[in-house]
Image (cartoon, rainbow, N blue to C red; front, top):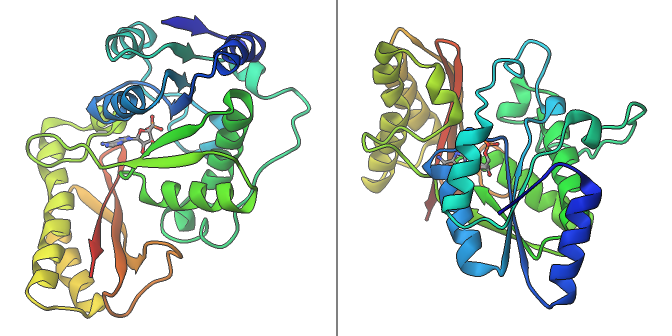
Length: 281
Ligand code: AMP
């Protein structure tokens, strides 16, 4: 596996791969790898000739009050993991490499970035789409791999790809969970033992919603109320939102219908956690 820090060097390497007729898969990450990240890499390894993993904690997707400085980082550990799953290139640029001092250009997907997580993180998705667009331009992958764990991110990136005619396929990989069903996240490392136990209510509330729907409930507000009651029974879990929305437009639904996304966000101690399920009717 080649570890590469500059755009120029990565482009030179990938140009040769492309000329040799090899397909390229990109896995964008912020590092501190867990099984979720590794699953994306394995999928890319299965489907593409060349696997590029980017490891970059992107400052423009964090608000000043958020955890950019304290975000967990461990380059040597990540390098071993990426190498073990068979990545070919690990691209870890510096901030100066990615953002020129006079950087003025951002990619903004409208409307759908203001809902769900966008309500409390108004600039977050602009940071995400800007870095992902830059990575697409740098790597020019045939396929790029994203986790369903970040459901809104998937919807926003697919919209950007359609609207800006990026010539690649977005592959969505199911959420990887711990044995007790907690969705894996680099931010789970912020949780104390007691907080981690209470955080289980998030996936439990989603499973409860699924059971309600399976038994015939369709009214979104009733489902949300029961989820909220469950979540509020855990004092260390501060619910930010529950959304029951169309999985393409992210518009809130009054009734569960078609492809429905049930998504939530909550603060548990220092960690802001998200989770979701998709129900297909
Ligand atoms: P991050 O490093 O948190 O920005 O995540 C990098 C990629 O891994 C994103 O596409 C995430 O959606 C994906 N990812 C993170 N956690 C999981 C998980 N538990 N299961 C599947 N994919 C995940």
